[in-house]
Amino acid sequence: MGEYKLLSKIKSPSDVKRVEKDDIPQLCTEIREKLVETVLLNGGHLSPNLGVVELTVALHRCFNFPKDSIVWDVGHQSYTHKLLTGRYEQFSTLRKKDGISGFPKRSES
Image (tube, rainbow, N blue to C red; front, side, top):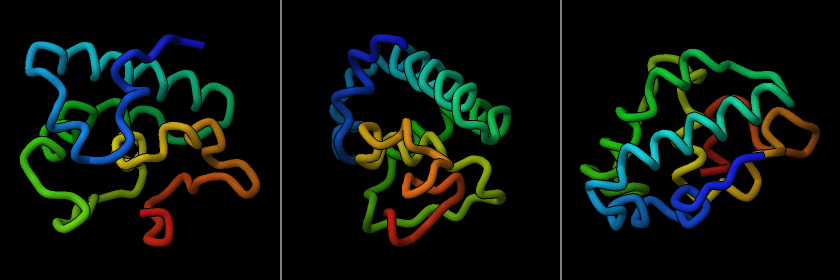
């Protein structure tokens, strides 16, 4: 299990805006490590999520979530969004019984 110094502090979309610009690459690295770690254990869609890490972080820095909305072209790209919207602590339950969904789910957001 990795150490996630920046990612573990993200409890809401507003926290993403407070990450220093120079720390964004490290945040993205931590997100990728958490994605790989979780998908290896639980299964899920890895490649589509790895491909949108920087895009998702940028969206969170530019838009006002949850007031604004994201519509993903496929739900397989939503894991980073889940990590940045207060679900980091529950992320290890991804795709498990009674855990967070492997797809976008309004009741979680």
